[in-house]
Length: 125
View 1 (cartoon, one colour):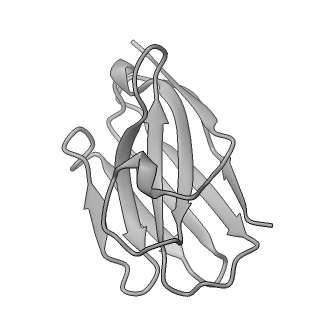
View 2 (view 1 turned 60 degrees about the vertical axis):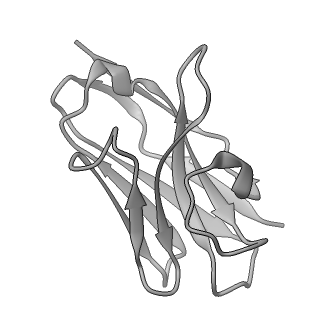
């Protein structure tokens, strides 16, 4: 059974930092992408960043480029999202997701197959 477990969310003041973790298990495919997404109340789910398991290549949404950094520890099957210079508009539930049915560089939520339960990030002004 594929499982994705996020951790590291919380409450932080504007300008602060958080590091989210996504521990993935229960799959054997070597070639995949893991992405980070977020969803604020009343808004659509937004793709933030993704990373390739094979070469570590990354993609970022314009909204987080230069502030957020995705990284991975393949030995631990864990992907991280370092979030710096946080803003109140970054407040949302953050999800990680696994793409295994194909290998496409995309931040579209519909292209991801498995999802974690999410972790709340709240940025106060």
